[in-house]
Length: 78
Image (cartoon, rainbow, N blue to C red; front, side, top):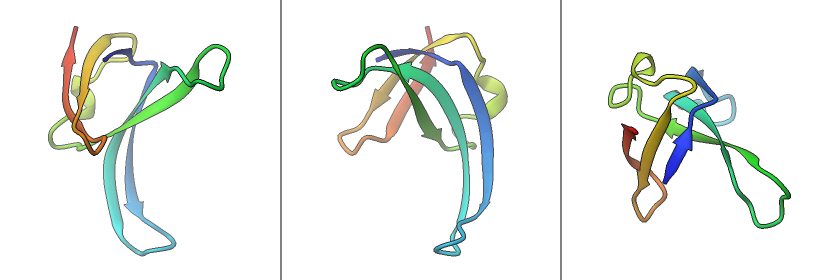
């Protein structure tokens, strides 16, 4: 699937409800939904070690591949 990155952010902290630590990079892009006219705002959650934030560029296009559980297994520039 091809996406265009419209935003990115690093998120790290402790979940208030569970107390578990989290650390990920979020990538924001536009997607489609059957019940929406136009586009929806979507986000990918990426491992910051495998996909460092400085290697992801806003305004660039990427190919994204997901495994059968919906996790990103590949993010490569177009």
